[in-house]
Length: 370
Ligand SMILES: Cc1ncc(COP(=O)(O)O)c(C=O)c1O
Image (tube, rainbow, N blue to C red; front, side):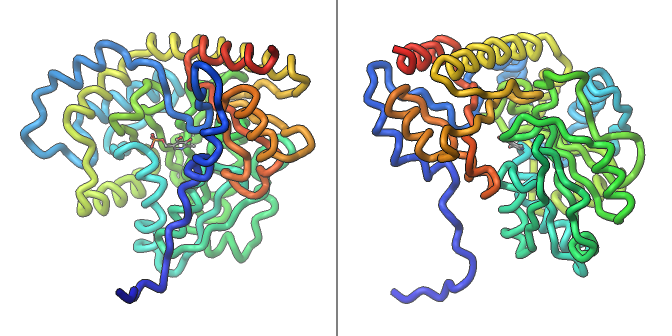
């Protein structure tokens, strides 16, 4: 059979590049997977009950989200981020990966004269992939030695072509906290909407939680229930901010049938109304961060404590991230993520996601330190 496909070929999914390493973990107790940032802890019991008992299964859910869901999102932003947002400036998404991956298509339709997506040079890979899937041009923005965007390096030509600038703080994979005010100001000065992926905001360790939302136009914050409430499996998030952009995106996405299932909206509504389970989760991640920093220290690897997130961003000994990754699988039975999965600029680091129970991390520690 001949193929007429001559265009886009999906690249290997980043984490599938790690599959060949998994059999190298031959330890009793098996592989401890610290590569993908997928939560392992349970969601709140009240959320589980809401998922089961919402009685919303039979009808189509609202694509922008039910009034209750959007009001719960506003209540959470007010309580936790000090941001006053009207429920009409909030809309649901089916987890934020979906939003990140499709946003450039919708922005390009709206502003066909532009074609560029600006994203941090070391970042969650879907910012770049969303641009490619829309036939747009991803442009990696350099980061400084503290992993913050170097807005001054964006050329005038790229700014003129930009559909949006992505910023992610606290950032995956580095754990860095960026200057969101500076990003918002840059966007307004260049007439480029700034999308701020704030899915790790509850896991801010250095100072108060920060959002890009400042009551002014030109910025949209993107939030996820996946990490905050251990709900990655049910797919719920939302975006909020610039009323015109949110309204446009809500309208266009409606036509594609992007709907968060009713039971999921009900569960997310309960989750957004509760902060106690988040405080419990913060304590778990804090304990795991301290434990793993101690393990690394014991094997002579210095790693900074992250300012946010539940990732450690570790300078690989000798600058060879793949060699260090292989060593950690062979000696510790632990799979981590080499930094080039997040952009070429990350090649000298590995990311360790602290998404396994504390006793499993302690097991890795015992294996590594004998
Ligand atoms: C920076 C960042 N944004 C978005 C997501 C997607 O989260 P979800 O689609 O589960 O909401 C992730 C997941 O790892 C992430 O790290």
